Amino acid sequence: AQSVTQLGSHVSVSEGALVLLRCNYSSSVPPYLFWYVQYPNQGLQLLLKYTTGATLVKGINGFEAEFKKSETSFHLTKPSAHMSDAAEYFCAVTKGNNDMRFGAGTRLTVKP
Amino acid sequence: DAEITQSPRHKITETGRQVTLACHQTWNHNNMFWYRQDLGHGLRLIHYSYGVQDTNKGEVSDGYSVSRSNTEDLPLTLESAASSQTSVYFCASSESLAGGEETQYFGPGTRLLVL
Image (cartoon, rainbow over all chains, first blue to last red; front, side, top):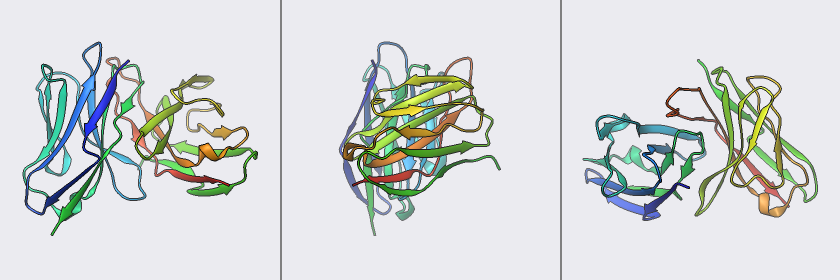
């Protein structure tokens, strides 16, 4: 069965600094990978996803993620953090059978 | 605009009571899902449905049931609420794609407290 590990339950950065949220997965077959964002008291919104093709995926709000098969990773980055990026971020994996597994989440705090 | 709604948004109930959480989507998606979100666990799948009259158990289905009588709705029932079912519940839906890479769209969540 596939699983997802997000390294760091809480990440704090200064406004304007690089954001790096780590995600590693395990899957017996090539997976589909997702990053979702959750703002307080809201549901999850899709940031970006990797299915096939280009391994560097660009999403909304300036975020991007790179699928690295050799490292079984799908880390999320943003060059310059904004206060509005403060939220909880979830990495998820599926083999395409609607059995989507989520990581435990990483809470991003942005300091002024 | 198409959307997915959940009701109620907040619910307090007592141990042993039956509780039903509603989920309604206007995306006309075949696939619908129920998750619970708990600290340190992310989201865990409770039940899911691929279409009318179809239901399937997820990772944490014990104590929960669903029924799918139409495309738009997938109510989640807690047969006899337990304190361990205090959680935030999210409904999601997705269309059916040949490759299986569907994006799931989430509702705003229902916060349930079982006393």
